[in-house]
Image (cartoon, rainbow, N blue to C red; front, side):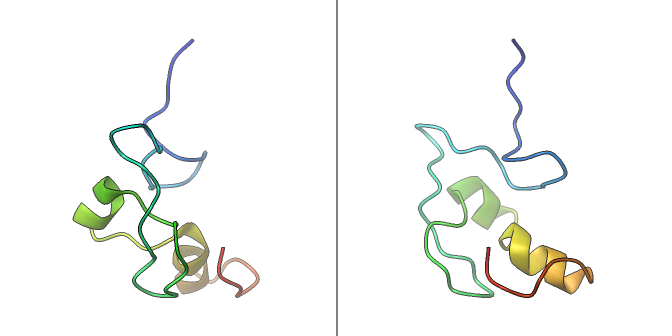
Length: 62
């Protein structure tokens, strides 16, 4: 079975793994445990904030 490098289909966020835990807050909404170190290095925000910026979602932190 193939392993995805991404957290979810349609997401740019990296999958959480032992060496890349989802333990960092989103820089936009400040919600804890939204990003991995790889996501932060790429300058990402959580999916809910990204969706809001793109005009999708319900406006609540994800």
